[in-house]
Length: 185
Image (cartoon, rainbow, N blue to C red; front, side):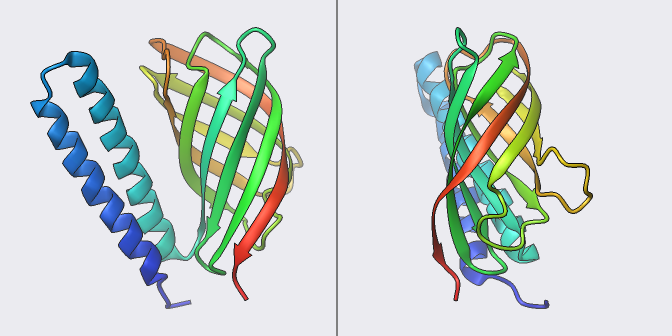
């Protein structure tokens, strides 16, 4: 449209700078565990800031997700926040489903770009997802299971937050239900 969502650019740029500062600060921490945790926090904050900035400039939508998986029952539950910079709306979804995976982190955080998101509620319904991670950092692809090229889909960077194994792969089926929406006209 030729317009840029400036508040999104400012928030994203600030997060990227804070993430970089936290990452650099991890070098001065004496404890290996402490340094690792601070480094991971810096990478997560910085990555979220970069994706926020990109989506704000493009006036597209992004998703931030936190999920918990039960390795015994293969159940996955979480919350997803979709930020639509074009319409300036925030759309919160809960999700639950089943995931088959190699041993990996039971808690994950992901941030990504949402394609074909036009209005609040578009991220609701059934989604299939698959992902790969190495040492807790990876990528995930999620989409509506229909074959339409206009289906909502998300490409995300994922972070395993606890107990990450060297290599993880997973595939799953989740149902997203809209909890609330705020912003917009």
